[in-house]
Amino acid sequence: MTGIFANTTGIATFSIQVLNFNSTHAQMQYNFSGGIGSQSSSNQTIRWVKLSPSFVEVNSTQTNSTLVRTYNTSVNISGKTINCTAYEFELFSNENSTVCISNSVGFPVEFTLLESIPFGGTFSYNLQLVRTNISGL
Image 1 (cartoon, rainbow, N blue to C red):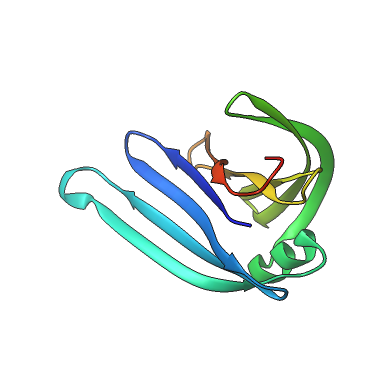
Image 2 (cartoon, helix red, strand yellow):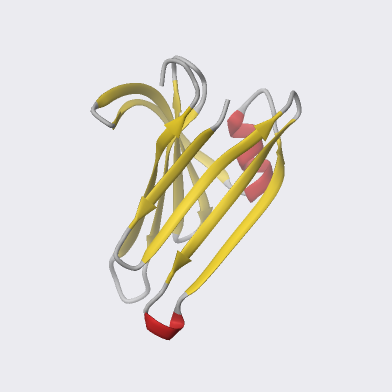
């Protein structure tokens, strides 16, 4: 099973791709490019991430985050409604992330990052599944 998650703004492009997996690990590729003018940059990182029977356990262990809550929700991707379970984590005192896992196949379909900005306001970024070879998504 593989999937590509992406989002593009006028300033930056982020993507996460599951390249490969086995019974214990998934090979993930993280991509970023963006900036303005001469301040542009890009970065690509590929690493193997340990899998666990529980995504919550993996995320909490690898990011030193705390699970804040879980809830049922749905995500609309390319006109298709996908029922999922959302796992909301506190990463730092000013940053939360949410991962929505499809109830039907157990694969992530959306990642959201919400960060408080100094002097007020918030920054929110959303990565949705844009391509996969998983039947049912």
